[in-house]
Image 1: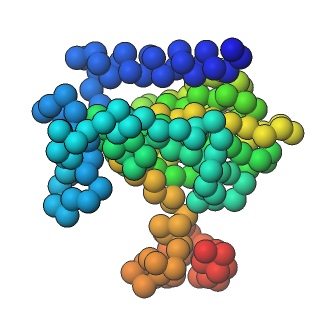
Image 2: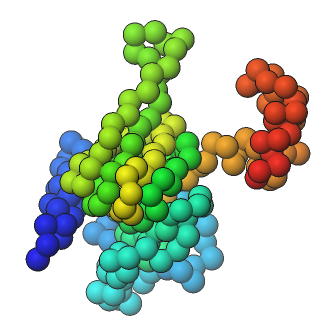
Length: 227
């Protein structure tokens, strides 16, 4: 088998080993039973998903396929993804894990975004990426600092929960990453979309954004026209 296969196996094994360690907790609440397979037909609203009748659970509830290739276009141009989440593996419900495969065209920019409910651990399978996140400067809390690194195949980069982070696919070949989140619902909040998107325009005025970013209103108007 190829080296990429064994890299993935080692990566996933470490994630699951850590998740079983009593000193390393997922962000989600700990489960109160061995498993709670999500019931897609349930109408009860809970923090997570309602449990399927354990007597109806099968091995298929704990498995999925399709991460050998990306199947869906991402929320930004030049990228596609496939996910192993509670939506594709009902048995992940309450277990505090999500895994995503992303494929990128050369030069694809991963816009600044936040995972409000999860830490991200990204493994580069193919290609070269610039990955980074912004945080408050520990030396001066009134300033910010950026931690970024050029990552190649086999490299792993971690993003702490809730911090603005970004990336770019470098080089001339397509790139691939496998990302694991310590939540079944990590949250995907793109900063520009939330500030400049049509859905928020009625609630966040151009004047407010212009003052916040210290630019002219026409600049905000131009940016909003792109969303």
